[in-house]
Length: 170
Image: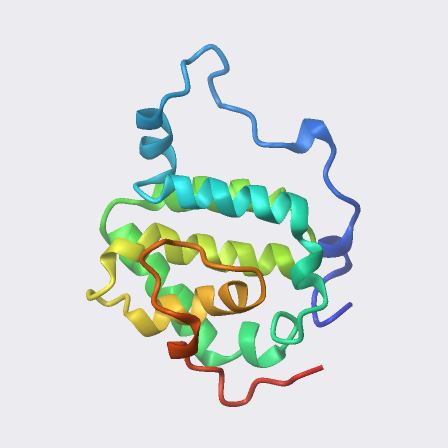
């Protein structure tokens, strides 16, 4: 265990054969296809994937990223559950699965975990106001937004994002 995560998260970077490959290689990959597969926030999901693939070290040592208060707290469970419930309730299970699969093969360690949380938030972002709230979205995307940068052009400024009350700084 390292930072509370299984050693498999810290394995070497995936090989080229592990990278995302289209399910139907002969199919023309258009914006419409990406939107069908990854949802309306697909551009932000792809930007997140590019950043994770290239700069996962930015989050690897960020204190909040490895904080047990962030990824094990009841609020984290509530936020991930709310994102999953909202996405699945709006018939977006496949978008959520595609996003989780893409982000699950890129990066490593805590950065991979943080990116997958951002992915959950992005898939359900336009459902904020249902059972998925702004607080849930901010809780899922906050560590990435504070340590790496914005994930969506419509996100509120970071100084308005609440810090987890029991966050441990390492």
